[in-house]
Amino acid sequence: MTTVRIIPHEESFEVLYPDGPSVYFYFDDNPGRRAITNRMSRERAEATAKRLARAERGTVWTYSRGDDVEVFATDDAARAWFEQNDPEGVAFERPIRE
Image (cartoon, rainbow, N blue to C red; front, side, top):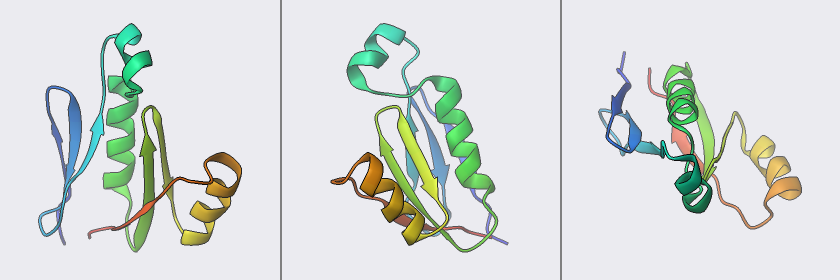
């Protein structure tokens, strides 16, 4: 079983895959600056990192833009969401490590 780790950094949470690239969820503790930088709150960044790390098998599609983070189970689900919410957005397929 592959272990996926969450590593807290000063301004992000890193979801570390031992055999692949990491995924970072950036946050800002200052609400005024967060509104300008479009980063998540610390709590939301940590919860999103945990949700991604806890997924059990297959692949997921991830999308993040500022404070908006989405994780999709299928390509079709991602496409349907993009059609309604961000037609020019892009999701990345990530393997879920076991």
